[in-house]
Image 1 (cartoon, one colour):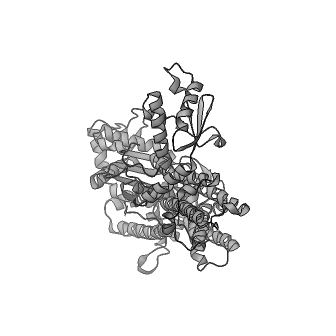
Image 2: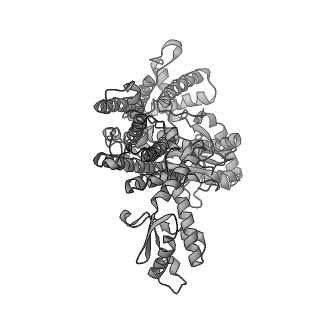
Image 3: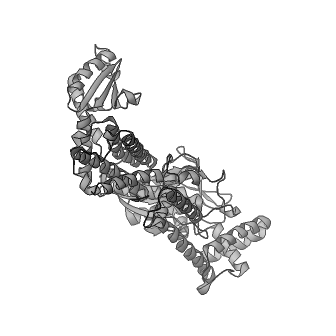
Length: 593
C-alpha cells in the first residue's frame, strides 16, 4: 500500500529519535535518515529504551563498529534528551532523560487533541476517497457468527482509514443472486411461502431454515431440484412479477435483520449493493474483456474465461449456460464503484482464500484498459473456528452472531457483578463490556492468522482481552473522580518534568507507542497492531498502579499536591490513549466497571 506522506500522527518518541539521529549523523558526517533507520529497541528491555547497531556506520570508515559505538556514546551523552548512553561492543544503548521524555510525550498528546481522531489520527489520506467492502453476508440468513471477523475487522479498518484522513465509503456486497437464491425461490414455491406473516413478511430465521431444507432437497433429488431452481433464476432474470416479489421478500427480511445486528455492534454501511445489481452489466463487461483480447470464448462449450496470465489464475466470466459468475459480477461492481465514487483505493475484505480470484479479476481489468483497477486491493483474513469447526449454513451448522453477543453480554454481566454492586446502570455496562469483548477478540489477532474463538477467554478482565483494556480506562477514571478533577482538566495541569520514576517512564513510553502502533495498523491494513499498543498501555498502567499499592511514595494521589497533579496528568494521558484507540476498534470505554 502506498499513501501520500503528510502528517504521520502522534509520535513523540519518534521526535526524540529524530533529534538524536541528527546529532549522531553530524558527528559522523553522514545523513540523519541513514542513522534514524538504524535506531530500534535493544536486544533486552533492561539494556535501555533505544539502541543502534553500528556495523553499517563502520563501513567505509577506519573505525571498527565498537569504536563507532564508543564515539557515539560520548556524543549522545551530551544531548539533553538522553539520560544515559553506553557502548556495549558494536551496540550503543541509550535511555531517554526521564523529564525530557515526559515533557515531550505529554505536550505532544495535548497537541494531538486538535485532530478529530486524537493521538491515533493522521493526515496521510487527506483529499482521497477509499471504498471498503466488508461483511458481505448472503441473503436469506441471519448474520452468522462466521461473519464476525470480517465485520469487526472491516469496521475497525474503516474507522482507522477515516482517522488517517481518508473519505470513506462503506459498502456491503450482499449475496442476493445466483443458485442459492434460486434454490430458495423454488423452496418458497413448494411450501407456499410457509412462515410468512402480516403483509407477506417472513422472518430471516424461517428463511434460513428453508434454505437448509432446500439444500437437503437438492442433495436428495439433484436433477429435479436443479432444473426447478434454474427455471426460477431464469424467471428472476426475465423480470417475472412473482419471482421479483419473492426475491424482494427475501432481501427485505435479510437487510432488516442485518441492520438490527449491525446496530448492536455500532457498525453502519453507506449502502448495500447486492450481486443481483450486476447480473446484466456482468455480461456486458465480459464482452468488453473479450473485445480487448483479455478474455476468450470457449469454442466447445461457449463459456467465457480469462486464461492464466502473469501468475494469476484462470477465471470464468460466463458459464456454458450463459450465466454470469462471481468473477464477472465482481468486475462489473468494480467498474460501477469507480464510476460512482472515483476512488483512490478500493479495499475488498474477505477470507484470505479468495485472494487469488480477486487478484485475477483486478489484473484482467487492468489489461483491458481499466488502469484504476490497480488500486483495488484484496485484504484477506484467516479463518475463525468455534468449537473446532467452520460454520456451514447450508448444512445447518451455524451460530447466529446475535446469539454470541447475547452470551457475551450475559457473561460480562457476571464478571462485572463480581467486582462491584454499585453501578447505576449495570445492564449498559455489561452490554459495553460484552460487545467490546467480541469486537476486540476479532481485531487483536494478526489479520491473516487462523484462530479458535473462545468466548470464555474473550470476556475475561485479564489476558489479551478487550475488557482488560476497558478496565484500565475505568480504573483511571475512578482515580480522576476521587481526585475531584476531570480528564480534560488533568491533561493540561501538573508539571510533567516531575515524572521521573522508572514505572512512570514505562507508562510514558507505552503512551508514546500508541500513535506509531496506529500508523502501523493503517499501513498494514491490520488493527491488531493497534491492539498491541493498547495492551502496552494497560500493562504499564497496571504495573504502575500496583506498585503504588506496595509503595505509598508511588501512589498517584500523593500527599504532595504538586506531584499529585503531575501524576494525574499522566493518568489522564494514559486514559486518552486507551479511549482513542478503543474508539477506532468500535469498543466503548465505560468509566465504571
